[in-house]
Length: 271
Image 1 (spheres, rainbow, N blue to C red):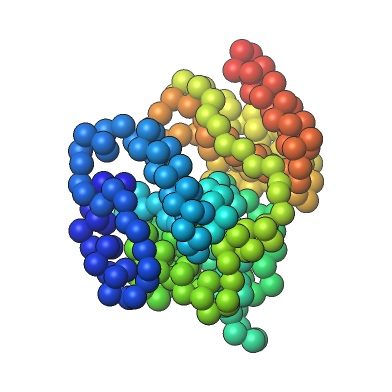
Image 2 (image 1 turned 90 degrees about the vertical axis):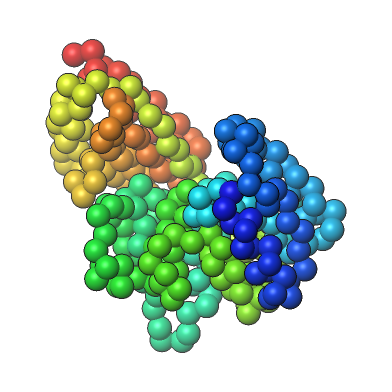
């Protein structure tokens, strides 16, 4: 995507003997200034090329060389949630008998699918110390960021791409086959305008609504309606809005959760 990875990745992937086509490897500030258009065009182009040439995988490496978007061998551009769970599925397969891998995800990541070989912890995604990072084999987000500790403690799109290729090869899998194993569930993120002066009130209201329900204050306020459905509210640290995350087992349950809390939030704002 015309970012800094263009100076390294094309030669590296050739040295590894991987048949490839590289697009948009030249740095271009003008094209980077319209990221939404570039992202859409990149997704469309890679999807067409992968299917036409029967390639095994398509990858969009964002200009900061941290974030990734994946395209399966069938041309499906994976959404961020399905991509995360597809990678977790591959890591789970790669664990030896009697072993476990430790994974760290942010509080707002979905938790509806269980992996028997992974110990997944969720917490505040900031202010990490090196000693904390050493505890985990993989640190990831829901936005296409992956850090495999075996290589680096930082998010690295180039190494993550190669690691995922390796996991597919060693397990003799197609990316589309893995993606099909991920059952659909409802997951939604959005922002709600909220003046700085009302953020404390909104925290209090969410806490009051969590009475007699399972809840967490690790990062914002997280409330479980049942074993699978939850809402997480995190007041934004810099902007005048609230970050809202929701998970539910299906669309019907998710819509019910969305309707309930958007009405509640609107009411609390006007009180």
